[in-house]
Length: 359
View 1 (cartoon, helix red, strand yellow):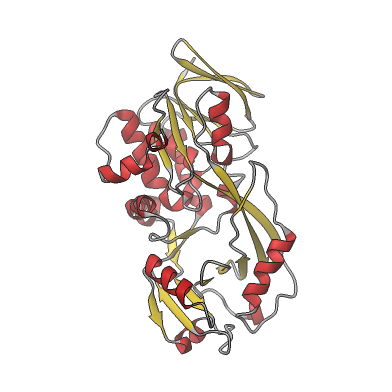
View 2 (cartoon, rainbow, N blue to C red):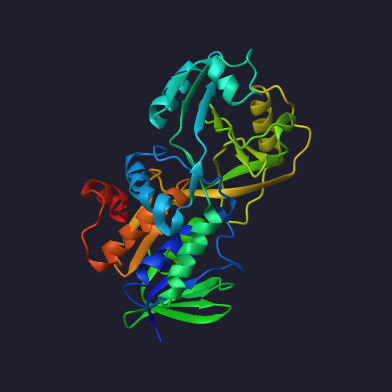
């Protein structure tokens, strides 16, 4: 029997949509891998920074804050964000500081917060406490539990190989069999345009971008628990404490194709060198390295809404680097649009997120 909603993709976008839509009808979610959140959602830096991104993204992030902070006990914990710059980086520093809503602080204050920063390399710094760590695994499991409790079916190991539409019903072929649904929700992340092509829907032009990361031991054996995320001006690198170690990323956005991404060793080495130029402790070994794919629409804004030519094909894609921090409101918007309810975010933001903007 066909479900009301057939969701392709088991990252944070798909699983949050499953939780919201299960209140409206029957849901089947198909995930290609053997467990949820295998690709980008499982490789996120997991920071809630509400002013990161363009205006429609910020609107979604701000609308998500209450859920992230309070639902099921909340998934946020204090982190903070610091921006640092060396000589000659004033223009990039000012652009980032204004965009992220950071307050400039004295270099001495920055050194006190992160004692491995080099006093002779640091010329300016800014800080804000409105950045929070996200317990991503807990958020995923909360949404999955909500979906299942409402009768939603989650099928893993079900890579979609063909999509067809007959008699008002979508049919997806997978290794686990065929699944059908009245409305197809495309939450396939880096593969969202591929899914559209399988369904005979015009792709939007979504592009995956690789981002590499390295996990290194705590520099100098310091207790990192109270350190903020530190970002180089122009987002040329960042470093974030994580369970007693430090994640360092070159913050690259290299266009690529949908695949199981891995870190580029040369790009990673260059990013680590930019980080090392600002700190007193060299990187002597890596605990691990990996990469994820951040998939953007051409205007770097999420795509949420029914396809203009085929309204039963619903886009929930283009999350870029904002998937976790926008998921509560993005999934709520998807449910509101499908249910015909007035969205909770402003009409201008809804329009800016619609796939119709590419028509």
